[in-house]
Length: 59
Image 1 (tube, helix red, strand yellow):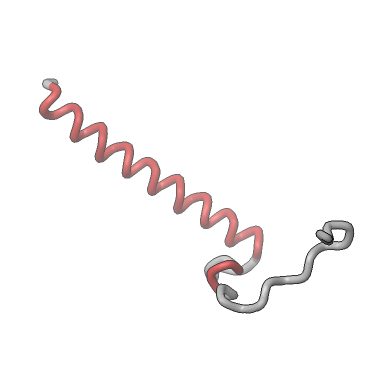
Image 2 (tube, helix red, strand yellow):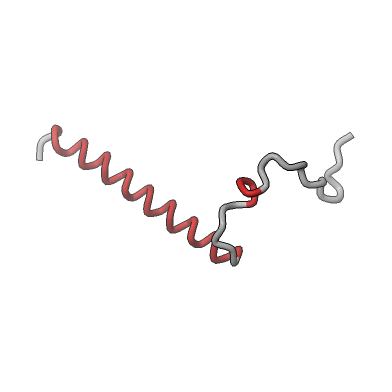
């Protein structure tokens, strides 16, 4: 196989593998959260930030 074919095949293969892994991980997160909707950051973006956890206040 020449480089003229090998490089595009490897590039497309890499994109496909990365997409499959991203979808798989997103599915795992949704199952663990018991919520298939998008993440809390996207759903609540633009609202007031949540309060700091105890012991993490900055002065």
